[in-house]
Length: 164
Image (cartoon, rainbow, N blue to C red; front, side, top):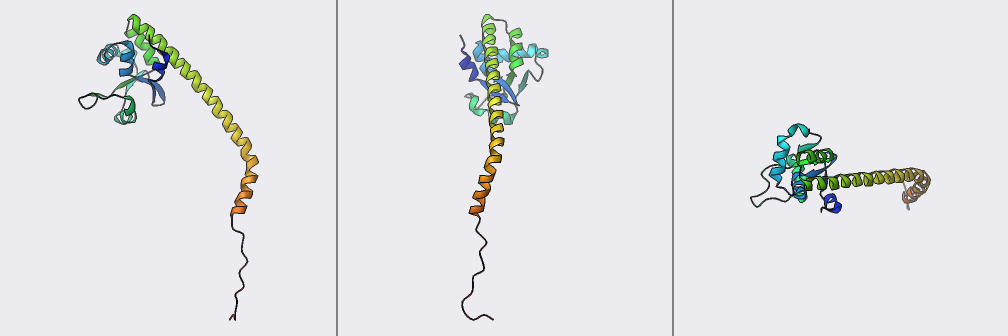
């Protein structure tokens, strides 16, 4: 069975959304990528653009480390990616027992990731609050340090000798 850890490693971020590549989903479901895409295209009304979209050339370059290229010099098409809702919709298109079990695991992983990100947001807010609190206290210290670092206004030196 597919482990949540394996699924978690395949979740990427594109266009501010958590997504999975068509190729990775096909591997998890135990089908070829082209079979997965054909099933999706036969049911295209179930996959609006916020459920599934094709990556742009720039996005493919940005995700290159996650995409294995073929021996023919790369993929012959830009990959599709599926959002959490798109993955959920795949369960209505792929009706095998394996697809059902894999979908359950993927949904659990997305939920776990969402909870983890919420925790990070809470920590981020707490750190920002602490920074604001301590910024005012350390402002005095930083001002004193700045004054010490600035050269003191030097008195003009008295020149030696006869002056005109």
